[in-house]
Length: 181
Image 1: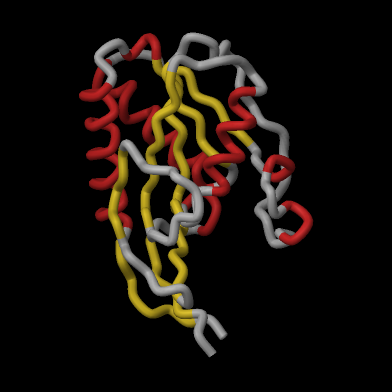
Image 2 (image 1 turned 180 degrees about the horizontal axis):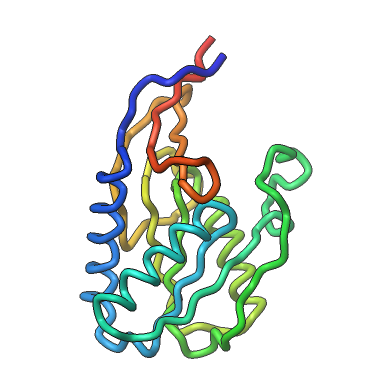
């Protein structure tokens, strides 16, 4: 049984977090013409679009933006039937020689990130891949570390983080859910 254990972020908190991540990306990447921001479908895609818009607005620089769908790259594909909707990746720029900023909503085991990197490499060889996530909840199974993190919320194995995004869920919020019985 799942139930809401805590409201961790509201719409204003989320806006501030995305603004901070955007500024951190700008600070770490002095040549913005070399970066591209790629979101992981579904919520990471929307978060990436918001960050791209913020960076463009702050710096008056056009930033390439794309989306990867990692469904078929996941090592748990046969067992993961509750995945978000499947759709094609959408990268309309050459990733070779670029610094890719990979964006997702929640970092957990690291398997989604590994799958996203595999998908990016199918498009070419970037100079680097940096990782930005809205929430890092711990419990890594792979050696994946974020470059840009909105918030760290350590969770128990029975707790999950749900990120709700207005474009998909009707509102912006981050919830801590309890899945214990």
